[in-house]
Image (cartoon, rainbow, N blue to C red; front, side, top):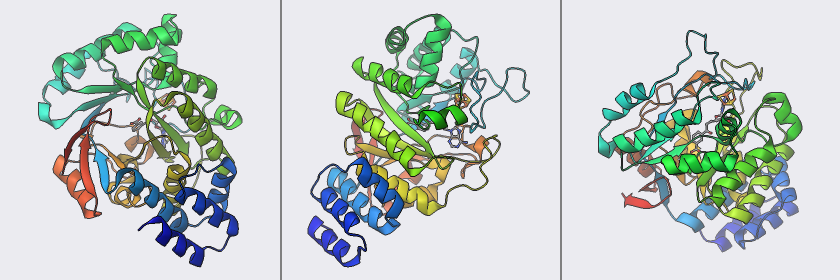
Length: 375
Ligand code: V47
Ligand code: SF4
């Protein structure tokens, strides 16, 4: 559908003149404001934002949907922070804590066929006694065993903790990790930037301004990163818009974010005490509005282990262009919080079929979004 046809449908169906004006902005490629985004969250129905988000996604990428072949390595679930929404962290003494040695990780990596992946994603808890040498050696090890892969590793929260524990600056930590093989950083730890709410749900965690400063420093060093939002807990629509706006503002400055990943709060096995998770329709609205507001972050990613394969397929009609990744049953963060997929794993063929089912074109990419192959 072109922009004139969409405008026509919007004119015939829209009940609200202000929403109509936002649609016009989007269709004319104009940036929408924070007030616009708030109005969309408060008033727009799913079809309205979905049609616009799909239009924007198609303008940018046509029918392409990107995917990559990756595994997650989670070196330890021991963490000094005790975020209230987290179902993953453990004390060292807990029976179900783990602390993989480099040899144990090497063993897992050595059995993976080379062609099965192009990315290793590494995140874990902020471990109180693992020094930076462990993490540098881990990166070197991955590159030694799988020299062809990109490594996307360590949230800003882990980076901040490494700096503190080793008495180094963030710049020094990032430089050491980059020299050891770090290619990109994931977007975790952003949670919600509103300071008051952040202090309630993750009181000891990296401050919002520091999370942003660490990503800015990474961008300045040439390390591309992702960004996330944790939504569906106690946040207001205004909190979501504020979060997106802080990211959009930083991206205007550095252009270092590749992808944005909305992470839906899952309620199992954590102490936040939210009784009802958001309905699926709100997830779709959130993906759509995010696509409309974040006009400068190219990729909008659905993290399917959390939302499930089938639902994730639907998000591809609501602004999402990136279907992360084959995973190979290698992450526990979400299964411990009650995610839809208990043992997340997709073969390349399954991934391709899932994308093709929705009438889209699967495009395999690497971590930095270089195209590997179109199917
Ligand atoms: O920061 C923790 C979230 C994040 C829960 O950059 C929860 O490519 C929902 O950031 N319910 C870590 N979410 C995971 C992450 C990520 C995942 C996939 C891809 C990328 C990427 C990044 O998981 C944490 C936190 O926001 N989280 N607990 C929970 N109960
Ligand atoms: Fe630790 Fe991350 Fe869990 Fe917070 S969300 S407790 S930082 S593992």
